[in-house]
Structures are given as structure tokens and as C-alpha cells.
Image (cartoon, rainbow, N blue to C red; front, side, top):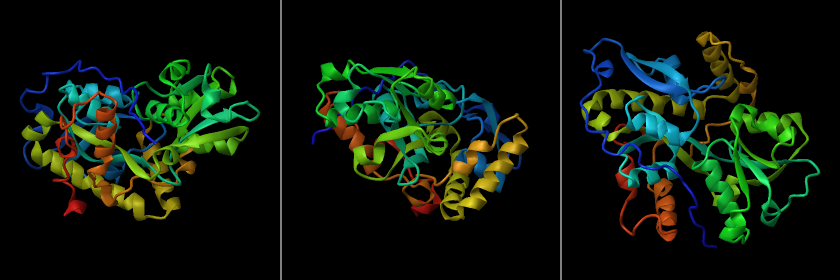
Length: 335
């Protein structure tokens, strides 16, 4: 069945800002600590944070400048040099790159498999069973123009809704940390949940799953990547290599280490941050969701979204190739 990309809204607000010179905070002499600024998520552990704790980043030090809101913001902040690296859904990365926002993906950051996926949920007893039932309903997503909106609209199109009918489905942005409660308070009719938040909600009970992204897309897949600006990579290739090498090893560690040991490590990392964060949700962690060993990026992870953008008239045929958007040059598992 023909599937179209839908809306991946990220306007090229930051075009032309990537021509600057190297950032002094990452141009330290050999042996000195180098600081990489990024966004973190309360109560969770990213793969760069895991890599740092495992000692895989060497003299690279991470400095969180605040909490992550979502991929589109991460792209904007990276492109405008407010952070050094970010993470986003690959579809949003393609859309941004096509708007002349020159970022390049270097390693996988998250994905969906049988254990870790995005699902759509309703309260038990809610009369929503098919795509047609979404018409006139409010659906909670973490941010517009990213993975959750994409999977929802593709599900609706596969359910034979017209574009006019899809416009009657209201998307409501709700923070991931409160999404479950917003549903239980009946402020929305459906909510899209992923990872730990989804598993916590299921463990509490009283909700029903409508669909999963791996069913909509028909496969397990790496959905998003870590990226730097192309200018940053040109000016700091050794830093990027060191970062990717460490993160790749951390992903592999999480892919091959018993689940209980991974969770214990995550809990220790959160506790050491001393930010008054809860570790309660970490017990629901099940897998990395990343399909390739060590986060190696494959052409299909971008090719499928490029094809859909072309089919939807948002990209011209041949305008972008997967190789324009990522590199495995720095990943030791790609050798």
C-alpha cells in the first residue's frame, strides 16, 4: 500500500549558519579534557552518557545544557552551535537537510524492535478500534514534525483516511513525562508512548494498545541518529571520531550485556548526577531498539524516508541520497 511521509515540519531557520570556525571548547590540546555540550533527559541515560560512565570517551567530557524537548529542536540547536551534537528522527533529519541545514548523522541513537517501540494507547473502554475512529479525536504526541507524528499519520493513511479526514485528527503536544497522566485525566483520547514511559503505563494497567510503529512500518528499524553539523565535523574530526568510537562501544555493551546489569548501571549513572532524578522508570528498560551492532547506519534507514518524501512531492527525485545524510567513517563496527 502506498505510504506517504506526511508532515515533518522543520523550516530551514538556520540555513547558512554552519560556516564558522572550530569551537574553542572542543579544540583543547591533546591530553586535556574537551567539553561536548548536549541536551539530556531526566531519569534516563543516553548512549553518550553511558559511554562516558564506561570510560569509553577518554578525555571527552559531556555537559548538559538542559532537557531535551525533541528532535526538531535538537537539530536547530546543533545547527546554530548552541549544542555540539544532537539526536533526531531520521525523517526530520532528511527534511532539515533538504532545507540546507547541513548536519550529518554519525551513529544510531534509538530505534524500534519487539521490546522497544512506539505504540498508540487509549483508556480501556474507549470506542476507538480503527483509523476511522480517530476522526475528531485528540492525540497526544511529544512534539510535532517528528517520529510520533509520522507514525500516526502513516497509520491513518494505511487505514484509508483521506487527507481531509486526517486534518480532523487533532495533534496535542504533551511532554513525555506527563503523557500517560494526560491520557488518564481524559484530556486527550489517544496518546503515543515509547520506551520506558510506555512500559510503565502498561504496568499500571487500564490502557489498551491500538497499533505499534513496527507494525505500521513492517519491520524493526533504527529510527534516529546522533549527528554533528558538517562544519563541526570538518573542524573537529578527531573529536567526532573519539565520540563515535566511544558511543558505538557503549551501544554494543548495552546490546550484549544482560538486561539487569544494564539497568543497574543506568541507575548508578542517574544517582551519581545528583539532580534529584527518579530512577523508578529505569526498571522498565528492555533493549536499545537499535537494529545494527554498535549503531552502524544503513542506507535503508534513510532511503525509505527519502522515497516517501519524493512520492509526497516534498523532495525532488535525486535531490538527496542516503549517503548525503550520514557517515560510518568513525564507527569501529562498520569496518
